[in-house]
Image (cartoon, rainbow, N blue to C red; front, side, top):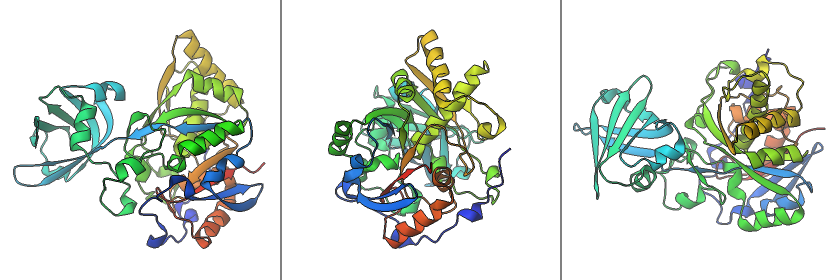
Length: 394
């Protein structure tokens, strides 16, 4: 059973001027707070390679943000905002982005009460008309269709807007199309950037490799649920939205090879911990490849992390797979025992958020000192803000 966790225990004062509205001109010049062996030190992110243990493994989320916010108008003039969340038909990201005539997506719909089920909304573009039809109000499914032979990924690059986090309180600008992507972004599908990765440059990555640190990647398509505030004081009642992820066999091999693993961002950490529970599921002959919100608290297992990953590795080899696709709603709370990492690189998060509670699973109650220190030292918070590297207490 999960222990009671109260949202109010994770409150701290965060003023508007402490939130970074824009990134620094040079990504790697952000501040870097290092928490290790109970001590806090301050560096620049460009120096992160000097902090990483030699022979450790860095796991990054290579998800790429898409221009997922689309705007349509009804004949009455009412503006309807459609925020793409996940593909429904075709059901895979790759196939949906390759679609050339129509596709269906689960969406967040702004002003949805004014949009009737089955009603078409037209958007005129140079090559014709894009139509949006509300398939299901309850399931929030929208069908998009277009006459040209453009792929869907080409189409949304033309008509879509990059969705910035709501707490930035500003419109998307041209510069965001580059600054709100990591330099290693590859797999399209996210509506939010894995922001811990925004500090990396090619030079920083090169220095890390020269140090003898291995780098590998996973993909978690970050959903809009990452921005949903926790409304219930009893956090266990918070709804965790499902997010899809992909992991290659070579990444699993690297996880087994290395004992010291460091996740770049909370999204990477969610993948690494979800993998453990998928390995456990496979050991129980469960091939659902889905980790529910409370699975870690409902099951007991003595599997080590390497044993669990090894089970997935064997399953993939037996089934001649090079990639697995899965989904997770995992909720990582302060008393959750992390199994995958020795450290985490992450930005500074909102008060009373599930991301802050995840931080407490790494450093315990020390999160309070870390955050108060960051505020006192004028660290910049949230997506475009400064960074930290947090090592688990031994």
